[in-house]
Image (cartoon, rainbow, N blue to C red):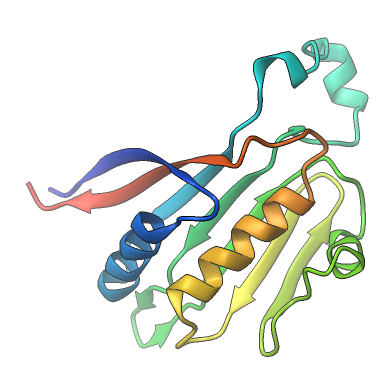
Length: 162
């Protein structure tokens, strides 16, 4: 029976080589996913919201969490590669990104741009992992409501054949 294997590593935004290598490996296997957690300084993190306050809050995490999922083959069709970004920057993230110079690349499709559920992008087949990684990191940083350190933590989830 296949189990999930988790690998974690940190990298700087300006040097995502290891992330790109992982994305290429998972894309070839058409399995797994990567969560990317933006680094923030502890003193910049606000006090936790009470559980009752969280119910009525319209935002998610102050620091973005980005997820990349390669397209998978299901029966006779291939699902597209997807990117998700949980953020607290408010509604209309795509318009905000464009205003900050982070345009949605040609051929990409916005599947969801929601206040609470975040931004979900559909990436066409054949996009270079380095270009996709660069866009994810720029978009995540742009949508952060906290100052970021430039450090990111990648959590890689893939099937183990043991």
